[in-house]
Amino acid sequence: MTADPLAPLLELADIAPAVARARDRFDKALWHRALRRHGGQVVAEVSLRSAVASAALQGQAHEREAVRAGTVTDPVLQGALRVAGAVPGLAERWPTAPRQVLAKLHVLAARDVVPAEDLGRPVADPVVGARLDGLAALVTGGTSVDPLVLAAVVHGELLALRPFPGPAPVVARGAARLVLIASGFDPRGLLPVDVGHAEREPEYVGAAGAFATGTPDGLRSWLRHCLTAVEVGADQLTQIGDEVLAAA
Image (cartoon, rainbow, N blue to C red; front, side, top):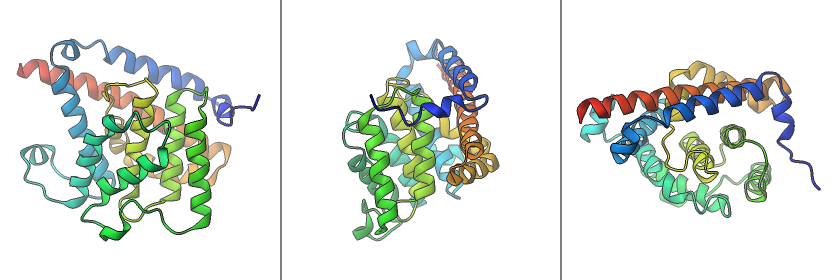
């Protein structure tokens, strides 16, 4: 039997306990009463906040209420909204055709940002292509490692590769959410983990750079950041639930 290539990541210092903490925080958030009574509203708000956070990480910060009102026409923000809205519907295809899904995410994210002929087309770099193939094989081949770890690896690798022109990081964040949804960890798309990344943006940028080095310390730094972002996202879900109930 072939060894799971991601298994050693759980042996890095503090990672296994951090996975357990993140899972526990999200599990507790899922008990919120708003999810039973107003689940659709919560999902819509999670999608909105995820998109606003992802666009902000791309250098396009906008007030959430302005976005909600539909007055923001910035193409990066609009692309992030399209990605956030499409992610749940792409989850079924993700485990079997990740490269096709990534291309679709890029079409959604980069419309009106890059030339039409570049939409959905990876950059012409054989090294990037080979690593993208390896990442796709990891997704389609399955892994026994916790989906939180797999999501972090997919996210970090796509940030490092930037396989598409334009807002490739928006694609990377969408792919990370897809891992969590498709794996069954977050089937309803309730975890606004991108809010956690945005609230800790300097750490996000630094840890992503550390991941790209491929060293054990770099990988550990990125995983710890991603797991903390999950905890922040879980708290954000609770806050959204409180606000939805208060407005009901």
